[in-house]
Image (cartoon, rainbow, N blue to C red; front, side, top):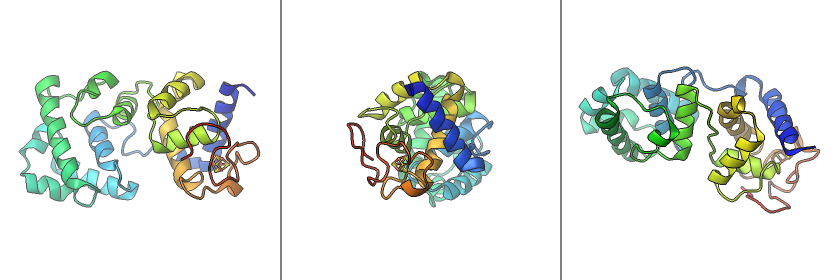
Length: 223
Ligand code: SF4
């Protein structure tokens, strides 16, 4: 089977296996850019349920960059507190809001390149926001996407950036924005970093890492 054919098989079977769970959260998809950016920042190293609760509470209190900057520092930290690294996230959010106001007239920029100019925004967040908030085709590669792409042999890459480029070659543009959510859910439930559930994985018949505890038998990322 060609690389593109295998990639589409993975996409289809993963979607079928996950059903509703494979579809993006309504909190992010179709929302205006600032809430998407905020919830993406909150989500880093934080469980989904906590992310949704914290993001909703924060955005109710401060729905735009001006109102975030108007919050006393302690209140902003308190609003973020149930999320991991809340002090760091409060500092980063303030920096992002200031930059959005100063450089982009208060509007979150819509391109990956411009999003990358915001303080602390990395490629993963920039691609996610460009895709989910603006519908721009972008492959957001986090640890789950990188690990599963390598374990299944779709790619043989060492870095998330290499994986992003490889997946862009394998998948049609209209699927790029769907890859992250689908792979993340699959990585949380089936192909976990440690002790993947190969026995109930739809790819166990051909996956080069199947039954090996997720370790690749060829080159490429192992986790
Ligand atoms: S067979 Fe195992 S290692 Fe391969 S994708 Fe499925 S869970 Fe992951």
